[in-house]
Amino acid sequence: LGLHLRGQSSILTLKSNDAVQGALDASKSKAYNALDVAVLGGLILDKSMGVDAAKVAAGGHIAYTIDAVEAVRQVESGEAGAAFLLRSTPVEAVKKVADAGDKMPQKSTYFYPKLATGLVLRPLD
Image (cartoon, rainbow, N blue to C red; front, side, top):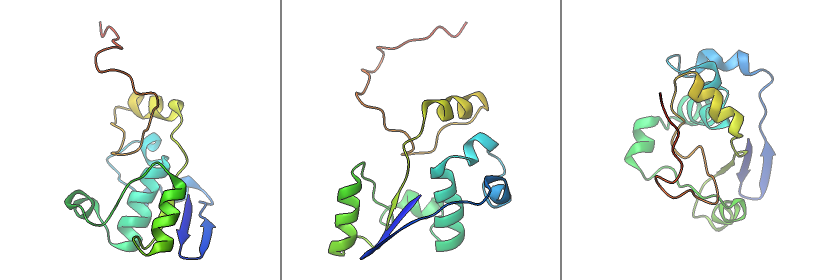
């Protein structure tokens, strides 16, 4: 994860993803909890900053943008206090989460170009 505070940027890395599994959502699969967005939401926002899922859902605490330059600009201008920059989620990670029976977290995927709704169908039989 990248973290940008006014005038300073850092890279945050886990020494071991297994070491933080106990701090993440026990009802979710290991594949889900390995996602950058799960670590950000569960370990950093919730456990370290006190911004839990209810506060995120209520709005006002988190803003989303796909543009890293815009996120940094918002911090530098004082519009935001911090910017967390996440790697894009690989398709293989999406598949692992789905195979484990979990749904992807909100705002964790951004695919472009967008597929038209109903254009892609897969038989479920």
